[in-house]
Image: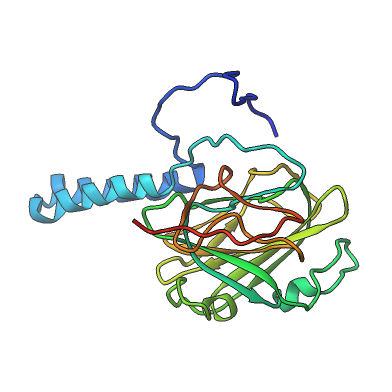
Length: 250
C-alpha cells in the first residue's frame, strides 16, 4: 500500500490536520448546505435554517476519511471499521462464503468460527478497510431489511455485502458489511480480482451500520467485548494465536 513508512523508533512524520472528506460524501454535504442557505436566505426561516446548516456540517463529518497508520505483520488482522465491538460469538460463516467458488478462493467452510461484530454509530468514520492483504475473490450483495445493526439477527436479515479475501498463503478471510437502521446503501470501492493491502479502503456504508469479521479456525480475538476499535489500526487478531483475554470496564 502506498504511503509513508512509520515505526516505533521515530521514523516518519506526524502532524495534526483536519481529515479530508471522501468524494462519495461531498455531494451530500453540498446539497445539505444548499438547502440550509435556501431556507436561511430565501425564505428567511432562521429557526429552521441554522439547525439545517449545523446538520450539513454533520453530513460532511460523517464522510470524513482520515489517514491511518496500519501495523504490518504476516499474521495480523486489523479492524475493518471504526466502532464498538458489540458481539463476539461462535457461529457458522454465511452460506455465501462457505463454499469454494469457480472464480477462485477457498470458502470458509461450514464449521463455527469466531465472529467479531463492530457497530458503527453515525458519529464514527464509515470508510471500511480490508483486514488483511490479498486478492478480493468474492463479493456477494444481498438486499434485505434495515433493522438496528446492533441486533444479532441483522447479520442474517439486513441488507449486507459479503467479501472474501485470499491471502498470499492461500488462506481466506471473510467479512460482511451490514446496513443498519439509518444506512440505506453499501458502496463498494473494489471488485473481485483486485489486490488490496491490509488497511486499504474497500467501501463505505452510509449513516450507521456494522461490519462482521470471521476469524480463521484456531484464532481468537485480541479485542474485548465493549472495546472501541479503529479501522486499519486496531489489531483484531493474529492468525493461529489463541488464549483468554480479560478486561475491566471502569
